[in-house]
Amino acid sequence: MLDSLQVRYQVTASGNECLELWKASPEPIPLIFMDVEIEGTINGLEATSEIRRLEQEIAPRTRSFIAIMTGRALESDQEEGLSNGCDLFLTKPVSIDAIRDLVQAHVAT
Image (cartoon, rainbow, N blue to C red; front, side, top):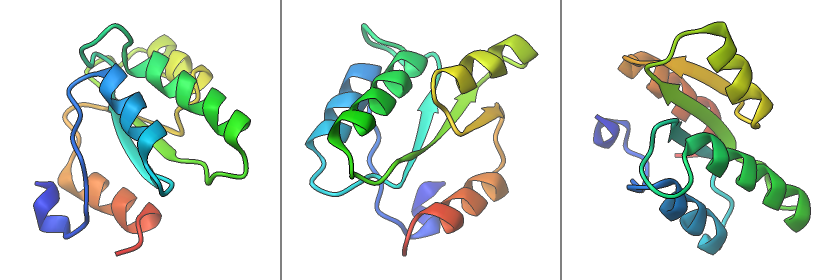
């Protein structure tokens, strides 16, 4: 699905891996799609919160736009995502049009 958008991307298998990729990236990562239930010792919300903490510490690094993706649809789930630093809360299934719109808005091609 992402290949059709013709942008460079990386997929991680865990919250830990996502966080390590973010830390190791020589350039700011403009857009992150974060799954709440991602594997690892930290979940997507914890990884998001840690990225936000590190952005404050490492300033002036460009802030990543983080879209949380989850099957959870309760208002309390959305509030939890936003309080952990996500910019957008998306309930699965997420349409390719929504993904395309975010990529076009946040990623230079």
